[in-house]
Length: 181
Image 1 (cartoon, rainbow, N blue to C red):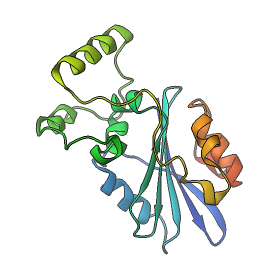
Image 2 (cartoon, rainbow, N blue to C red; image 1 turned 135 degrees about the vertical axis):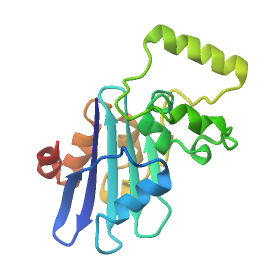
Image 3 (cartoon, one colour; image 1 turned 90 degrees about the vertical axis):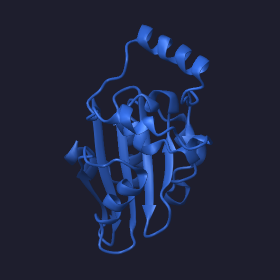
Image 4 (cartoon, rainbow, N blue to C red; image 1 turned 180 degrees about the horizontal axis):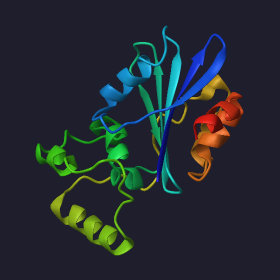
C-alpha cells in the first residue's frame, strides 16, 4: 500500500494535502505538481511511502531543481512511484533504453512488487542482460532536510515503517500530516 502527501511550508506553518500521482510520469511533472501547491516560491516536500518497503522525499524550492532522496533504491525501482523518483542521473547510469517506458504502461501505482522468488529471478536476469539495477540502499540527497532541522544521519537511519511520521514530527507538523493520512 502506498501513501503520498504534499507538505507545503507557508507563512502560517506547514500545510499537508494528500495527492494522487497516477497521472504523474516523471520527476519534472512531480515538481510541477508540487510548485502548483503553493502560491509563492515556498518549500514543498512530496512524501511517498510504500508500507514497510521504502520511502522517498522530493524537495522543491521555487524553480530550483528538485532534490530527491529514496531510502531503498532497489525496492523503489520495482514500484511505479519509485520509477518517477529514480532518474538516470540519480542512479548514475546512462539514459534507459526506449523500451523501458513501454514496460511501465500497465502500471497504475498499486503494485506491491514481485514475490521473493520472482525478485531473485529478475535480479539474475538483470545481471546477465545488463538491465536496470539500483543499489539496495539509500540514494539521493540525504541532506535535503538539514536546513529544516533534520540532519543527514537522521534521514539515513529512518525506518520505512514510520519515516514520514518522524519527519513530520521533527518539522512540527505531525498533526497536519496525520489529518490527511
